[in-house]
Length: 400
Image 1: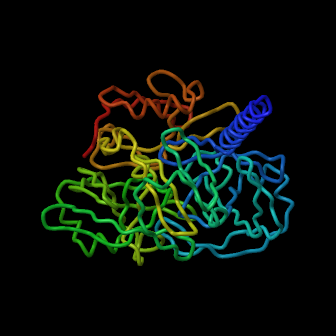
Image 2 (image 1 turned 180 degrees about the horizontal axis):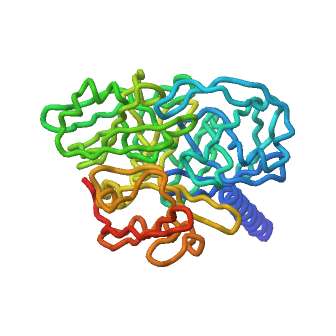
């Protein structure tokens, strides 16, 4: 009897230790991210060089920012020229390609990049971005993108966590993920077919120029135009419109009154393509999702705010954070028309040095992000032109 009790105790202890070990590994395997429409992860390059990277399912491999490379020992690696396409109203460009193997770490996971393009990423994001990581490194696994707790997790190809979740089949074509979706624009326009899941897209839905033309979206009355001075990775200027669609359906989920965009670009990723458009990170932020690459399925776990309101811009502009020594400022890279800020006189290329009497350098990035998401407040932008400053004042409200 005593031996039996000792055996049971030993089994219990082993199970407890195994549970602690599994829990510890699970916690350690969480790769925490920041999210503001883009997903940002910290990575370590060549063991010692740290940087902030955009996680992007619309990208294949590892891409490094040119300024990041110039400020590190990476600049001494071997390169050759290559051509690359991208977003924005542009075709292919010639860029440097690192041909030396680069090891990098994401959480506890070590990967190797064999050919690494160098891009100027400052045109579409803040100047602290080190690069982009794409999906090629995860294609033997299930990738969990957990928006509720803001982490990525790389799982084995079998997991019990997806058993009770809805599965949506996807196609993996040339390192891009495609699923079917249906968008009802209005009573006369329905769009159905293949869309790319693009976590590097900060719009809920962004249609190609060709899709917009085929569905006569230029005839929709209530819409706003936008112009972006840099249209994305390897892109130049980009333009298009935002409007509200009646609803969008993916799998068994339907969302009402969704803000969607469509492009005017005649070149690049949003011109004429085999897919209808992009489904971006803000749409999928309504879920914790699992991308099962081996079985080509996406599993969706709906969050409590699944039916949260789809919002348009409330400021009517976007600005990129820049620094020059101790000087920190924002450069306006996109304007929506019509909007309150446009009527107030803000223009592409304007330098914002302060908001509501407080200098940009005295704000944390998160503070500015939250401020620019606050509706029905007065914003006073201090604009610098040479040595002179002026103030632009407007009220924040949704523009569509």
